[in-house]
Image (tube, rainbow, N blue to C red; front, side, top):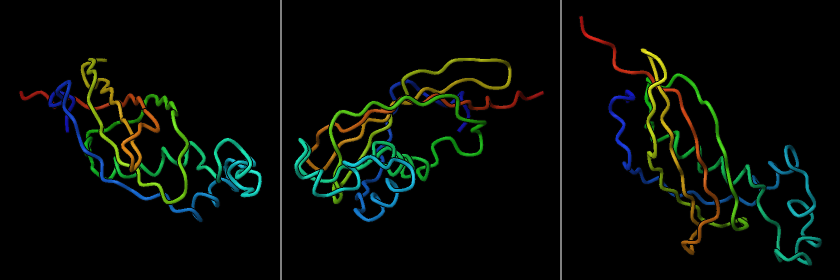
Length: 145
């Protein structure tokens, strides 16, 4: 979708995804090896009561669902920035779903601009677990001569 077609306030439902406990632990072992992600006995004694998902893993499984929706299409040039804030722990077996909303569209040059998208992610209890704010560089529709 060309940047010209983006309308502030437009929303996109992101399909839900279940957090796979073994994949969550494998991600933690490789990229985020904190005790609360890997040691069940420790995690059970913590304020979380069980192993929790690495925050980036929780974000990335929903991000994959968003990317699969293909909002940008071939007009995506590149990502510019992403800021993720985490509000609640995510556990293995949780089901996360999201809603993306276009919050800003900015002209950058004659060829492209920035689409700013906010993705709000909730668990199966409808609690917000994380919010992402992403800026993407998107092409303008080519001018007709």
